[in-house]
Length: 238
Image 1: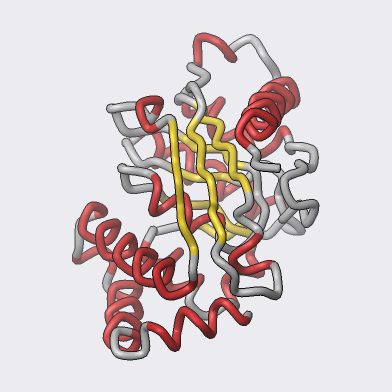
Image 2 (image 1 turned 180 degrees about the vertical axis):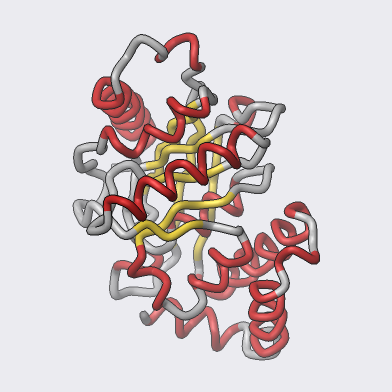
């Protein structure tokens, strides 16, 4: 919370304009291209990072497919994760978020701008509809971010188990799966200090459909988790 306040104070001249624009775009998202919205959101994150003493470093952008219609699967550390991915990824992405996020001011407008979906994990029918909708959109060329842990790990750079069900949309769409290793993304919003922090976003080599077509979703989940853990071990600053 302290860092969010710092971000707001240091951007006090820009904040009213950006907030009005964010709310407007969220309510009129179909009037604008994904590229336009993506550029606008990146600009917000850039100002927020500068005001909040946050640096984002990334690697592996060459692994992001040139052809749209893929799903990024990052580990989930905190509320800042999606902002870091938005900033680091050169292509527009949408997101599947848990239903509770729909009540968080600021984040819900961002997700609306991204044409994202909310999933109610207590409603099987609603969850299946989200999977089918995401599958259809990925087949049509939209890119998605899905947090396979289902919730924040709250263990810093340690991962929770990845849920096999999170990969159903990928297997149905037969799309590339791109593991994403998030390092220290819990620090901006999930700690109580405002010191300078560095968040790392590492895009890993895609797993193509031909590689996972004979695997079940639990096996895919285990493989993606292992790749992310290996990347974290390699890049984490101790």
